[in-house]
Image 1: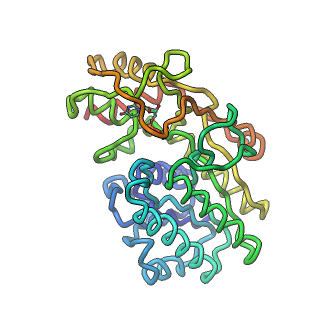
Image 2: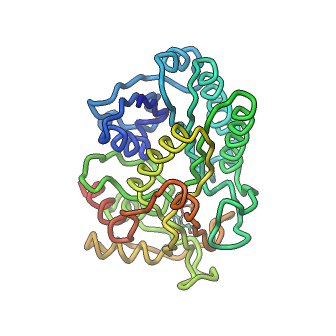
Image 3: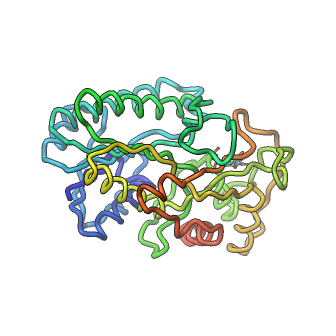
Length: 321
Ligand code: UDP
């Protein structure tokens, strides 16, 4: 198959590229390198530098001919989306529409979207399945939901097949050490813990220890990026072979607290990792845990790398370099 990965030089995209390449697909990577890693672009793939806001350049690359596109080119900082929504409107919504419209124009029939559990908002029940109401709590989550809805319309009106993959908390690195790009100026828990372990930041601020969880700190469903990558390959195969759409959660189905992540990171790194309890971060729910039974049933997908040990050890292996 010929697969174009938009945003394929980023943290998740590079791992997705690896999986498609490993099974012998022909992979193109379209990326503006705003946060992507040139060093992780595998020589087996073809790299096209470009921005999804540059419709002319995008059209040129889409016109090459692809069986499927995977769209991973989005901004993802929930907090920033609340203070600078314009940035998210332009890149996440306008950029995605450019891709969808480009696919229609160039007769590309299959579209996989990197969506997010942020479409659900404050959980009404746990584990969260795909029938859970969608009420995003931040503008980032809204942009993902809006793109999902555009895909539904274009599927009905123009026959585009799509898969919306609602990721829970992506974490970890390739266990063979092939991907080593680290995020600049991260806000997510695990990269922040790693930077505190290295002394790149003074300490980890634990955002609240008075939640109704087993140790009082926030609980999230961390899913290893190599498991996410496998979900993309299976989703492409599903929509191509069945000529059907798909909306599924990709999560590990078990929760880890901030303290559990911190303690495991201390153990694996052998570093002290200073931490202090601070106020809750606005908008943070106590716990988020996925039900992934739909992905398991429809795709035969099953997480293999999402234990706390593998997530932290593969991440530390990259950061300690
Ligand atoms: N968190 C924290 N300190 C940080 C970053 C995150 O205590 O510096 C907590 C946060 O409150 C949440 C969990 O870690 O309970 C995961 O946060 P992250 O930003 O990684 O992902 P989110 O689930 O918010 O998208």
